[in-house]
Amino acid sequence: MSLLIVFNNYFHDLATGVFVACAITLWAIARTLQADPLHAETFRPLYDALTRALWIAFAWIILGGIPRTIFFPTYEFIPAMGKGIVPALVIKHVFLFTGVGLGVAAWIAARRMFSVAANAEQDGIQ
Image (tube, rainbow, N blue to C red):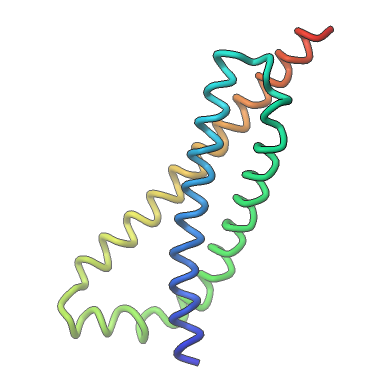
C-alpha cells in the first residue's frame, strides 16, 4: 500500500507539471494565432491534442489528489517534520497550486484566443 501511495504522489506531481506545460504551450500557440489568425485550422489538431492532455492531467490532479490528501500526514507531513523540511514542503505546494492556477488561466486565455482566431479564419475564407 505504501508503494502505491508514493507512486500516486509522484504521478500527481507529474500530472501537475504536464498540465502547466500543456496550458502554457497552448497559450503560446494561441498567441501566435493573434498575429496570423488565418492559420487557426492548421493548429487545430495540436489544439485538440493539447486540450485532451490537459483534461487527462486535470482528472489525474483531482483523482490523485484524493488519496494524497487522505494520506498526506502519514506520507508527507510527518516525514517532513522528522527531516526538518516542512518549509520546503509548504513552498512546493505553493508552487504546485500556483502552477495549476496559472495553467487554468492560460488554458482559458488560449481557448478564447483560439476561438477568436478560428472565427477570423472563417471570416477570411468567406
